[in-house]
Image (tube, rainbow, N blue to C red; front, side, top):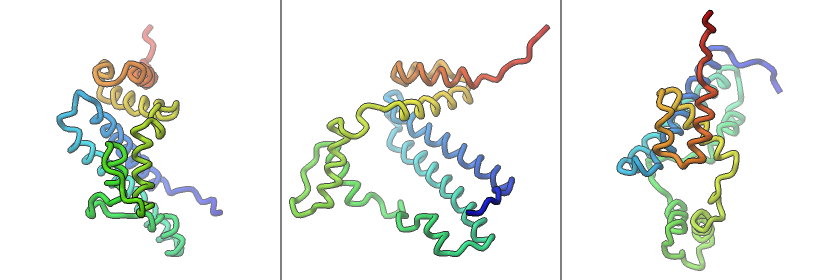
Length: 187
């Protein structure tokens, strides 16, 4: 494996784009809270697609560098996982609709459609408490970091209590407190 470090301008661009994507991810989480329920559909879609597009830009910059330095196209396509790619323009797939039906108690797909039943069962798992019903430590910490970071950047740490469950607000507050810039000592 090659040991050449990432060129500094590319590294800076990647850091900037990932930071932007993370902030968009925090907004996705923010718009799931009850106090902004009037805008949740529009804003979760906007910010989710903004995050995806920003990470896509990040990947394409790195891919352009790889191409420039002579990486074979089949290797690049493999690294970009192009077989997994799908366009949002096509809208939700049947699998998305089956999974949602499972989550929301919709009708069971036909018996002879194993693929549809698999997606339906994934959705049921979310609804019935099997899949991520109880937030694990890693998920809670990630959410707390995102909310705490945003609260610190917006200088609105007190707002955390107004839209987060108490245990998550407490964790986010701790993250925000750590992010306070130390002030020089005065004599």
